[in-house]
Image 1 (tube, rainbow, N blue to C red):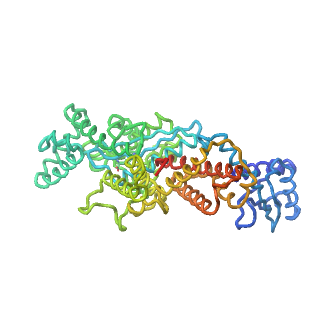
Image 2: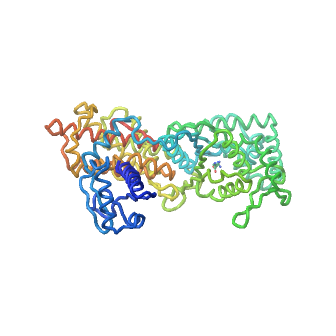
Image 3: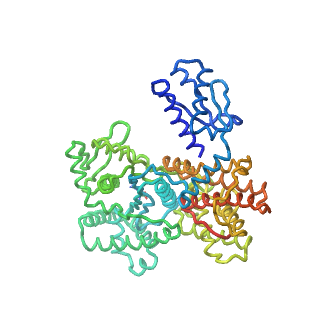
Length: 569
Ligand code: ARG
């Protein structure tokens, strides 16, 4: 809200002063550096220079311009100090502004229009077929889904793409292993584990029988060429793996518009390779095809000596396909820090090919999940399976409910909503590029900086409002709300839209997560200080309107982050 006022003030003053002095004048409107200097501060040094008048006179001119403008009503107090004009805003008018904005668009409060007519592709989750869904893929899924929601809230059209790792030489190995020592029944029963076992077995046996590698390569080459027997097996492995991942997506309530993975680009790479050749970028190197990327980066390997393609070749084809199909304004890749080099090479390749959209795509990187300071793994050093982690979080949440509220109905359903949201929030409250410690016990707690704390705050408000069967009708005493105890939280509520926009632009859901924690903390502190069940009806209704607004923001923000809201807990 303050932001809107700042923008209005800036434009108004620039128009007035530019007209008055007959030259373009830029006005800076900022928040005061120190407390007790009001809500808005305007440094006039640059203006004085532009209009060639002493500071004191400039202060007078700018102050007059403010107080004769439409915005004068908003100003409760105006003063100046050392070349700065400081304004205190009329708190009840600001409060009214916040509630008016909310009431005008209750269902979509905080939404922005910066993305109208623009499409953003978000490539996230993207697990590898025939391998378990790892904790790293969980991060990509959670962060990607939240960024997608942020972009939607800002008015963009979002295309959610699951770029499945469903191609590459390893499929030659798995098919070989399945045909030689696999069992259909076993794969049906426990697909991922069984396929992993076959892959591991292949690697054991190939040590003493290197010919197997040639066989696997031949199989993959034929798969690329469309051998129906291999294609059928590959399809089956893909389907059973995907069915397994779907369980995770359902639990997280995450959806995609496209599951076109690497294999989808099998027939779309040759034109790209031809283009690289035509542009004179492709170079033979010991039978393989590479593109030199200068001194700063290692060359990109485009085609192996046996003619098979690579991860980067498929990503290059995918990028062109997405540009042609979706005409994206931006294309984001939510992938771990460890693929930094890959995306730098991709960017360099596109630049070398002469396309100007090399800066329209971005590696939205993220860090590792640590346990006791080390990359998370099970005792045997294998990858931690996501579904186990989620199940454990749900069980722990159930225990908390049993302790705190054993009478609660639908305990299982609520425990699931708490447990899953706890994991999501714990991830998103950290800036994505940083590593973070994974402590299940801590993240499911109802107090502290946790997801359940946010859910609990919303539930608390719901139960206060339920006492009076509250209905929002806009009967609010704005004078009451101009008191300092209320005003801070109203300012925060008014900053929701700006927070969404910032989180979207920086692809950083942590900005929204931290904002929600602060809002919840402000509410809980207010709740400790103020009585809500007062007899004065107007006061009571006003306070209820305020917390209704707070809950609407909490619930909306949680939904954007991918969390579930609940009515009782
Ligand atoms: N499947 C890859 C992996 O697990 C991630 C793919 C990311 N997306 C992309 N377009 N490269 O490492």
